[in-house]
Image 1 (cartoon, rainbow, N blue to C red):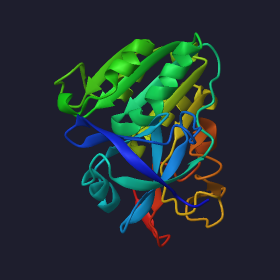
Image 2: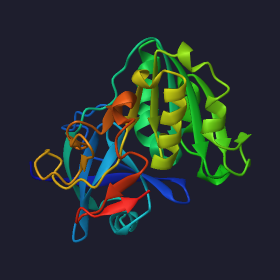
Image 3: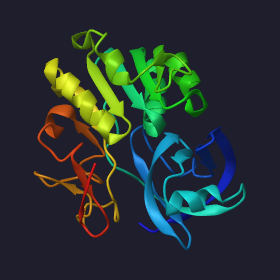
Image 4: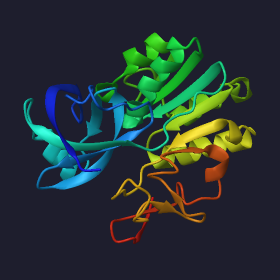
Length: 258
C-alpha cells in the first residue's frame, strides 16, 4: 500500500509535549481502537502511530519524526497508510484499563467503545505531572477513573502499579494496558502474580518498517512474533517469557536495553 496524502485539519495541544492531529481520512480509513497507521513525514521518516480517534493520531515529541510533525501546521499534509495490526479485543462485561502517559491514545477510544456497548469500564491512568494529564475526561465519561501522577500534583501520588495492588484484579473479565514498557512490564508481573495474566492484553511498540510482516524488523524474541501483524496487541501470558520489558531493537537490529 502506498501512502495516501492526508491534510491536517486540526491540531490540538493536549499537553506541553503531546499534540493531537486530526486528518481528512475518515472517508477511507476504517480503523478500530488499538490499530495503528504508518505516518510518512515527508523528507524525514515513516513511523507507526496509533489511532486516538477515527481520524486522528495523538503524538508525544520524542524523536526526529515527531519533532518534524510538531513543526507542521493545519493545512499541511502527511502520508498515511493502513490501518494495520489487530487492535483490542473486547472481552466480557467488566473491564479494567491501565494507561500510562501517551499510552492513553489507543485506550481512550477503546474505553469509549466499550462503554457504548454497555460494558462496565474502570480506568487507572498515570501521568508524570498535572500538566501532562490528557484524555482524562474521555476516561471519566466512560466509567470509574482513578488518576495518578508521579509527583502528586493531580490525583494519587505515585504509580499506577501501586493502585493496581488495591484492586481485586480477579473481578475483571479482561485487563488492557498501554504505556511505557517498563510500566507495562511491572503491570504484567502484578497480573501474573494474581493469576490473571491470561485475561490481559498489552499494546507494544517496536521499530516497524513495512507494517506488512515481511521485513522482520519488529520480530520479538523468543517466538519471532511480529508486532506489526501479530500485534501490536498481545495477550499477557504470551509476553511473560518474551523480550518485553528487557530490551528492544533499533533499525539495525541491535539490542537496546530498556
